[in-house]
Length: 70
Image (cartoon, rainbow, N blue to C red):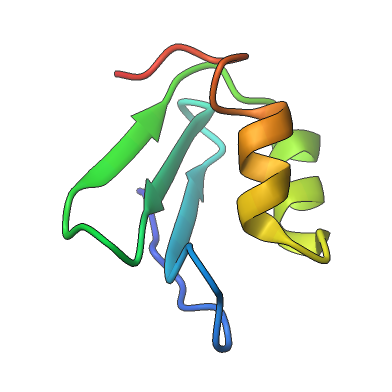
């Protein structure tokens, strides 16, 4: 089951969720209601995203072009 927990006052990503059963990362950007889903994302990558000082920058550098959008 994918959850979309809210992060406190994010600059660009108001909701990020992760399903460890399917290795699916779900992201909603502040500028759009659409939820983007990325396949085969290891859980440690999700944890690093959530711990990043800038989740938007981390997303752009480590996830956007590294994992397939589904």
